[in-house]
Image 1 (cartoon, rainbow, N blue to C red):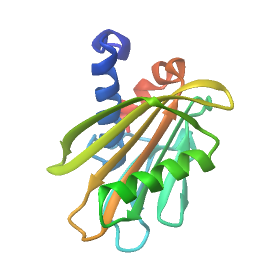
Image 2 (cartoon, one colour):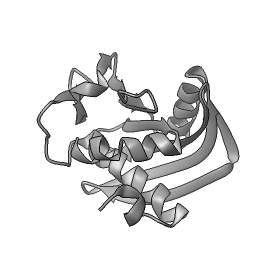
Image 3 (cartoon, rainbow, N blue to C red):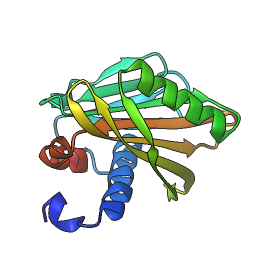
Image 4 (tube, rainbow, N blue to C red):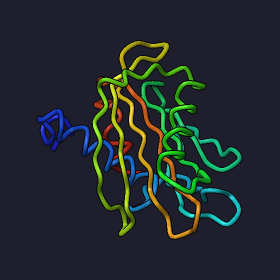
Length: 171
């Protein structure tokens, strides 16, 4: 079934997008041919990330990032040293600002869930980047490592999400 057929409710669509991105980043989906696996971080990893080669993933100090082939969707996963969720969220917001994403804070929706048995907290927003309107998601996964949070960053246009849904699902 196409992504748009399964998720007709905007609230459910936001939740499912976050869960898909989180599963993608944690490597919970079966690895697809043509996908690279990255430890996050490179030394003493708290997670692994599977990203399609076509997204040209790049490792950086503490994480990995990738942009869809059409440039419409950006994802990143990194370890953040944070003793509490509030400081981790502040780190995430700083990353979006530094990356040129303008977040509409009034649009914030939050969801708590479990990913692979770990507590996760997702913040979703509407926003804008250099290409126009975008959906933004910041998912924090509390790991078993003291003071270490897995931070999942996501932004993409609605059309970009639809066009890249199969890549996200297959990662």
